[in-house]
Image (cartoon, rainbow, N blue to C red):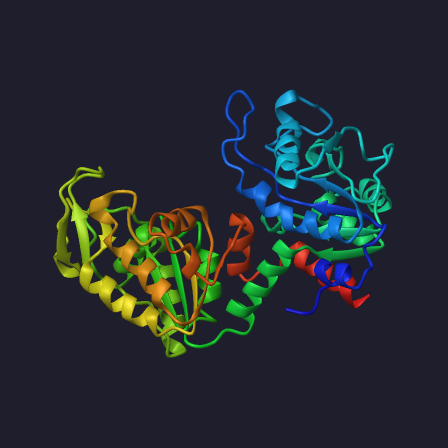
Length: 399
């Protein structure tokens, strides 16, 4: 990954003083039916970039998307007003909400923060229209991208403005993501181990194919592991799998083997006769799965082997729990993986909603090297794609 401009550096150099700073944050928070925010992690995560700008003496504009509004058709449920209220509480100062802001018919003073209404209400935002991009760039002296969750989308406030603003840079949240991804995938300390789990191979096939050329060990879990077990000639009973993708699974195994790398196939599993939290769990050898068995977790022998290997890893990339960890009887594999990652001296990066839920459940937040904030963006990075936000910021840095 090439160089990019960091907002923190601009502030340290005094280049933000008195400047109009436009921050694209990710404030897309969940709300109840009354519009009350039920979880504010993303708002709190946006505060460091805003504080940087305020401390540097900038006039600060912040915007974000919220939900899936129709461009040009405002509804009260689409409004960022609840976010403005919460942001003001966190900052300890007023935060005005500005509507109809694209043409710049508003003023912001140094030391002030305004929140610009839901950016996806602007006509041309999602398709990144050149006309909108030009107007966005004219609003500011410095554009700060600090929303990794939108980094895989080339939209007006994530890409177009980065092309047209006088200066475009990465905020602290995005810069941390870019650094962590480079450390894990561009210059990894070996051995590099990736854990990719989920219900279907089809949803993560391109990720598996991309990682097969990079990693030293590719641990698969969940329904994905079941398809790989079929590829290895094992029976999986009535477990979730995709038999039509067995050929693809075999190709990944062979690609890894050709490089002297490995896709570990479970040697034991935890099965049940039905999918339920109170179902009876039975540990079986992988060769002994019955026709009416459902595989819901890896077995303790497999978990121990994988845990030992993870503790020796130089770099770990984790996306997905390896079993139905929401059910106590089938959480052993995921718990063992989580604890091994926590105990590893290697650098670890984790992403994906279920992965974050597992990290929270086992209390290892402080033991994971970096926890990614973007689901879709994180998956596209694992696919080997260059995210639009990364590309445009790196290009602007070279200009």
